[in-house]
Length: 381
Image (tube, rainbow, N blue to C red; front, side, top):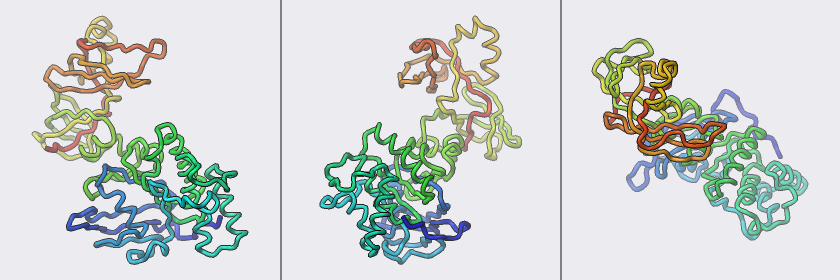
């Protein structure tokens, strides 16, 4: 395959500057700005209707911006048709040609560019080897499995080595096991090629397992951009916190603020918590705790083991009653109704030697967490 066009490493490969898109008087995108760096795997994550696919279509040139500008490799392409942009797209439906075999599907773009037959044979062979479909050249695409069809679509998209490969929920039609395998294959392929990948998905697990950075979208605008770990561990607001995983939200009030932390009154506790936000005494806040960050012990065990009791609470222990446990394979969730009426969910791992659920409905327990694992955000209605 031909090498991707050489371009400046300092210029973002894709830039959106204050881009808006309006359909029938409704904003699908509203003033979105985004830089995609060269060679990165970027995922746009959000629910249906949030505008993520619209971004992909504007980059590809299938739609025109209502306002704002789209740049590819530093060039303003806002008015250019798709064929004049050095990007290719893999669609959710694959969009293969059913009357062509695998070779001709992959070769289609090269033939349109009037490459020599020798170039076509060489480039198609390399593309099919990359997606592990060498030997399938003569197979009709209708006789392939869903996963194989998706690989053909990817080979057709990468055969010209575009600057950017756009992927519009390409794994959504696959079963769970094949989808997990294809996630790894796509990630490895992107690393091998060095091409910038921009993926659109509504699946948080898919976004986090494949991406260098994730863009979380909501209602036509960007809520947060960051690494998967940064977004999961430091959500900017409640929307992001709820969208990218299970979360416990405790209502609280700030007692006093100091640099990098605040003394907070929550669930009958009065404890110091880390925070990057600035608060004033009396401000209402939310304390966010992931289920896997919570620790649960029965009051009986704490009473019988003073050493465990001393090390457990650390001034941040809440008392309640187990309502139910939910089996999840390697883990199980423990739903606890706190004595003040709030409910929290904790994730527990099975004991390596005894894979039984330790907690039972009705158990009186204490719930705590490791200092510094909480996130404190301003109160939202």
